Length: 334
Picture 1: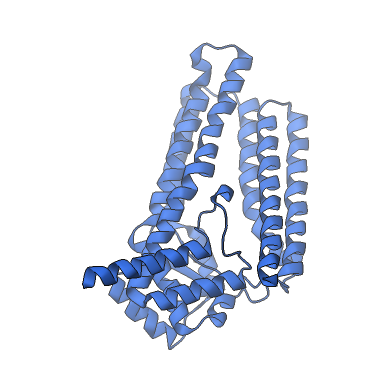
Picture 2: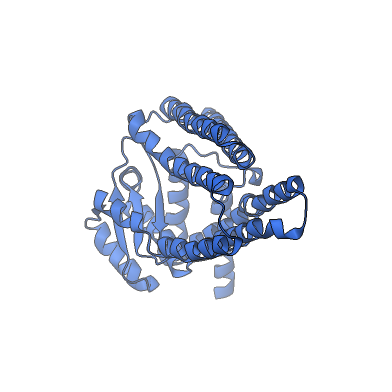
């Protein structure tokens, strides 16, 4: 009971921090669209300070509740991705204000950029760099994973172990729509048994098998592509300058709302499917045991409300889904 209270306190603090960060950064972006150049630079400075300040608060939470040993400079690197996204937003606002290109040239540049972005998501050059920082699996798990890949029909996939002991990061993920890289943290690897690690690998291989990353990228990029094209075409609608600006801001909310509401639903379906595949190829007991340990290592409460828009179902829901699936299969086999 005491441990569950600790998990809930940790979870509430981290979720509140993430929500505050999203609200501040997106508000700064929308303000940047309709302000002067000097104010835009001030907003960018505020955004950068906010990102690293909240990263430090997050770091202190991790130190207090999970006793991580990493220095802040290492933990803070996680915030560089958000900083990159925010910088791109500010550059977009800057170009919108200062670079007066022909509308059709703007549309040409925008629609030339998206195939490049899709290729980056497909090939993911960052994954290659990440792989160089990791190491490959060692026996006996290496041979077990090789057999599992053959069993699941997954070819040309490498598994890398990332050194994450000091950050106590218990995680595994598949990167890139092409499906060539799977990463597992050293902290998760050493805290799970061979069978449990195998269940984790089967889960990630299922994402590759069903092309979940590719489908997720399409879901994210198509509404964004549509919204940005509509954003550029808004001045042709014959509205006043102020109304056009309001319309453009409303248009930019389209991909944000979809990302907050429907994307987590899609991701949860993918996670349920991956858990089901893992149970099928490795066994339900190994999957359930791995999920329980994952919850303990990550200080994740057993039950989490869907209100938070999580991309994963709660640990208790995932375990219940695996148990139900196994019961259905037993009934079908009789």
